[in-house]
Image (cartoon, rainbow, N blue to C red; front, side, top):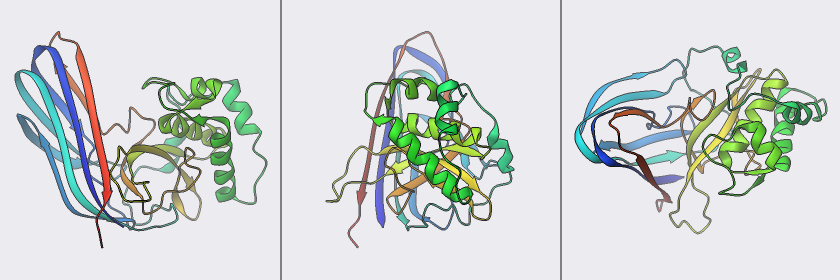
Amino acid sequence: MKLRISHETVYGYDHPIRNLVQSLRLTPSVFEGQKTHEWLIEVSGGIRGPGFRDGAGDWIEGWTVRGPTDEVSVRISGRIETRDTAGVLRGHREIIHPTTYLRDTKATRADKGLEALAAGVSEAADTLDLAHRLSAAVGEAIAYRPGVTEMHTTAAEALALGEGVCQDHAHALVAVARLRELPARYVSGYLHSTIDGESHDAAHAWAEIHVEGLGWVGFDAANRCCPDERYVRLGSGLDAVDAAPIRGVAMGNGAERLDVAVQVEEIAQ
């Protein structure tokens, strides 16, 4: 599938900031399931700093914006070609050992509810089967409903509520997988899901679970499937904060507001 992606994030400030430093994880991953043909990152008034590939295989680059300014925009545009690898992250280079992803964070820390959900999944024929069953259990336990949770909602809180968005499904799946001794991590990216090809808001998140013999395999509990050619992978981390496409620090006293617009559309063959 050939996709065109447009992603704009605009930061506004009540009072002009003096300086802004950002770390961007906004470049598509390099693996067999996707090939980038064009990719442009623009930061208004920004100075591009050094970039590097981290131990998880994600490309990260730094940007600095010198003020005073009361608005900063980060724009991404590009074309990418994807193919279905049945969720398996083939050909992705990284050096971090999978067991690193057994470590909990505040967002994925288990409580009694998550422990019960993990324990309630019956024994499976193999690790891959168990991962599928855990993903299905999370999809059943948390209904997809936008607007009921927020950025800092934890997996435990979303499960107790029984509703949430893709971030909550990913956090919960990461949590229960780790409880069953399976390394798991949070993945950020994009999703093209409109059958008629119309562009739409499509920032997305899912989880990856490490399966012996296969490596990392993606599971989207929110949509009850494994990532296919509709998905574009950007990067991963222990949780949403760790895998955030944009992280930064602004120097100033003004309150910050944020507007995000993402479009993913299929390009005619």
